[in-house]
Amino acid sequence: MSTLTSCVARAVVAPKAAAKRSAAAKKAAKPSPALPAGAFAAASLAATPAAFAATEAISQTADGVGVAVGGAVVVAGAAGLLIAADPNKRREDMMSETGGDEAASVRNYFDTEGFNRWKKIYGETDEVNKVQLDIRNGHQQTVDKILDWTAGIDMTGKTVCDAGCGTGSLAIPLALRGASVSASDISSAMVGEAEVRYNEQVKAGAKAPAVAPKFEALGLEECSGKYDVVTCIDVMIHYPTDRVNGMINHLASLSDDKLIISFAPKTLAYSILKRIGELFPGPSKATRAYLHAEEDVETALNAAGFKVTRREMTATSFYFSRLLECQRV
Image (tube, rainbow, N blue to C red; front, side, top):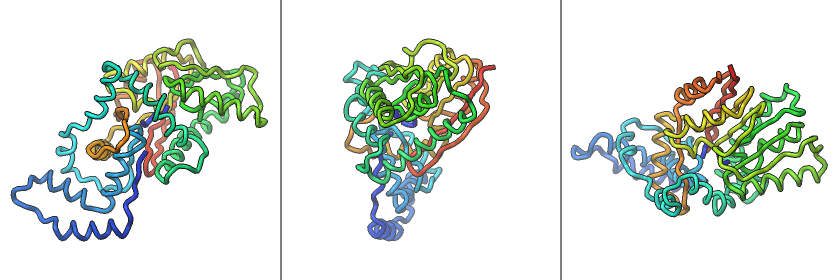
């Protein structure tokens, strides 16, 4: 679902207006002895046209599920100021509606307003803005990389668990290659849309596999069974650090051979950009978005009995995702 993730931006600063703001900011932005260095660095960052675009972009990124990464000059001095702020009140309000259950909060979001947004982003409609289109293209690049990795494998009869399948962007093409796919998502609306899209493609002439894919509304931890391949794309962005190891361990327990996952990598630049967006939230409700250090993810994979054999990075203007292919050892 989502995914990296997690989360849609609107970088709509008009070039002329941005240039005027930039000129005015340069004229006015003189260091004051009373202004801490970090605060001035943040003010300088916000004064640039690129930062105006990035701030708006990140702040309204698909309701917090993805993070815009392009168009901003990262000023290290801003880190302390940005990271010290508390941007989580809106999301805490969402969680209060589910008694503090974050998974339920994510499910509610993707069953309601989040479903309508992501159905468009992961669809073919032209009713998306440039940033939503960029996120769509970024996600599709990640899916295409997985399809390229598995292109040399005869998928006929291979069992695949696609956990967090969203609207079926990966599950459907794998099924049409002959795999026996178990596709699940915490959102019944999202997985229901995946099933609709699969049936539409078969009706349009795509060759159905010998075993029809199974679409189920299940949380990741509820997935069970054993599979040749387990995939989980752009889902870890919904998991806090203290739950990621358990998530990886559970996914690993389902796979007899391969495990393919993606996540939004935690770096200083991405962390600062994410926090800028959280400081200027858009009007819509949002789920929390979590970044993860690649070293920590790989350590958890190794502990679960898997070795990373291939890795790729997808980075567009408003979507970024680290993709790992892992083999059981």
